[in-house]
Image 1: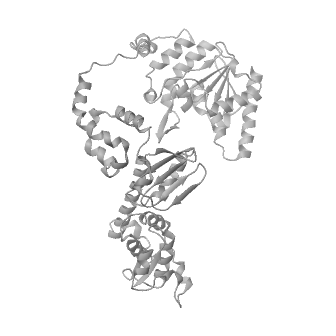
Image 2 (image 1 turned 90 degrees about the vertical axis):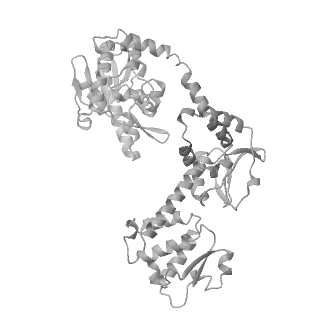
Image 3 (image 1 turned 30 degrees about the vertical axis):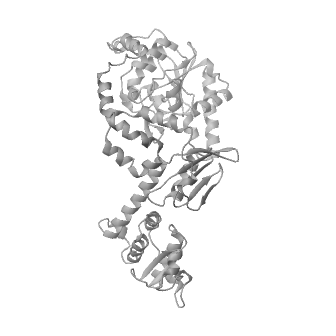
Length: 482
């Protein structure tokens, strides 16, 4: 029996070095053992330090190459609490030389076992992100947030960087039976195992948190098994809100009946007024012509011409001078525009404002709007990622753009990007080919250029600077047309 001594339960580098030497020396699975700390010294069978090598071993044999997927799998499995995880990984390593595609055979017992353990480790890391609860303490007169957590597997070092990013401005510590993680606003460090009494038992903020948690509980949607699947009872001891769960479950039936019996709340009076005046009879689809930009802005809140209104905060119409000689048309509201109800107030708007100033154009003298009225996006975590409107969505929104053109009567229309050009021209042009070109319209003259958001996405700084100069040149051409 050959025995390898590892520095800790998660000593991946130590296991990898020892396993490679075992493999190079022809030590078969079952004849190799991996022990941690004192257990290695207490083992009476074999050498305790095979990583130092044995006389006669060929160093070239240590160059045995494994797939990157195996390394990533092993890094996860080694965090599992099972006693035989090192042996499982060594069996896979032994077999990979003769079966290079072994990890693709998901029906293989060892492969399936390893991936299941890696999945459990990933789940434990996810649960740690969800169920760590910090309590306020003090250290050297400064706030210090401390949490006690008992992860299902040894995922502290793997998960701690998430908290360093998420709570970068806090000084915090996470204490676990496996070790400690400390963040001082600058450096993430790790310490030895901790005990429950080293963390605060409670703090003043918990009452506020419990009140918030209870207020978000919806008894009509209670599914106890699903809840316990997402919030296993093993974590309840360290969750302040867990003390409320039995009472909330017990009172769910009565609360549901009360909710059902309660009368429906009154509708939002402002929205009801808008809907009744403008959209109840689909007036704007049947000859409705807004008499002012204010009436247009109210009407767009009732627009149901395409599905984009469902996920947007509000419709966003143009803003600017009532009789502006220049109309600037963008693509659609972005995340910040959707929340503010105003066009071009986000990063792209800042680029546009700076470029207009360099070109000698006062934004206050222009009318700034978009081809599409609602923010089209897809959620990704807490962010809302922009999506390009389709032709049907641009066509549906063109009614609003045409109405603005009829009210403002601009002399020159600057289109920013393909969607804007399509909304103005009624066809999809090649922006890169037509950029800077003047297009005569029945009621105005259009000039096509790129969208300022595109300038923000250019990774090469030199290229970005060149394209910005081209953009300003297009704006100066607009100034000459005016």
